[in-house]
Length: 149
Image (cartoon, rainbow, N blue to C red):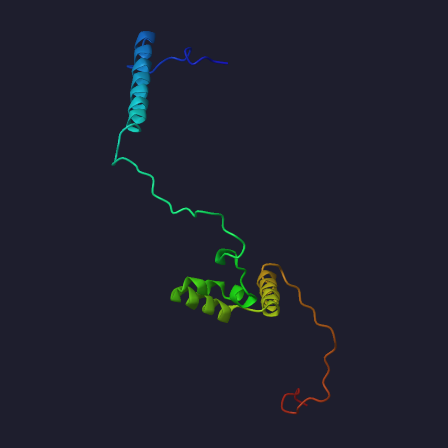
């Protein structure tokens, strides 16, 4: 194994002396420590007014089971859960999805159709051999096409 030091250097270039290399490493370390100190000190600055926690309206007692929040929804309400948001855009999107939604049988048929189309497309990649069997015979020749007599 050849050492890097054993290789000759190019003309006009020389390795820096160890003291110079150590001084450059010390400068890089000092620069890195200064950047880290500035980044850490930046977290200690105040950017806005004093923080005051927002006030909360807490209930004076526990909520009981007959409270409206604990009411269970009927099946009819559960089917149209998005209507609780009173958003016409969401209503239009859900209606559009219902119109474009395919039933399971149609979706399965489309998968079968896509697989068949894939098989036809992939079949053109491979060489094809065709064979025809049978005999060819004529009952009579037309006189115009026959050999001269």
